[in-house]
Length: 147
Image 1 (cartoon, one colour):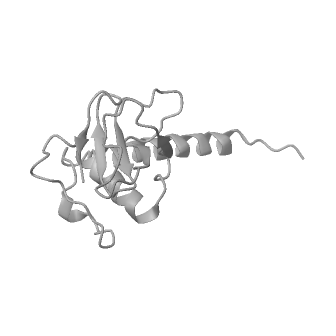
Image 2: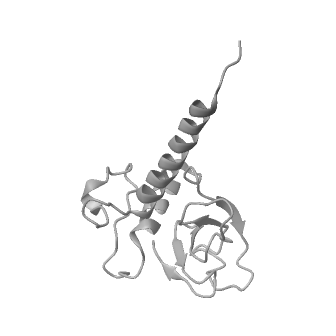
């Protein structure tokens, strides 16, 4: 008996495309119904380590805090994101030691999801073993302290 799988395969492809488009809207913070970014209060707090947008750093995008909260809670990158690699601080733009004089170890995290075939962009979150976090929007040329 000969079976024709064309409609089935087409349905799967359409489902994947719809899923990718929906995922891109969710991770970009875009809401097609009201064209706004979800409010901070609509997100469930993550443990006791929840970091809020700081009025001292209004230029730090909300997505940086979302990634930071996830990293602090789960100690790994979010699904679909790149992160956890060692950041060597070669240019010594970030502190090298903590207040006790111990060397600080850094890790880098993308703040945008990885899209196959596209450049990862210039935005990164850097977390230090001293508990501080830094944001760069120009691929390590300058940093703003997040935490």
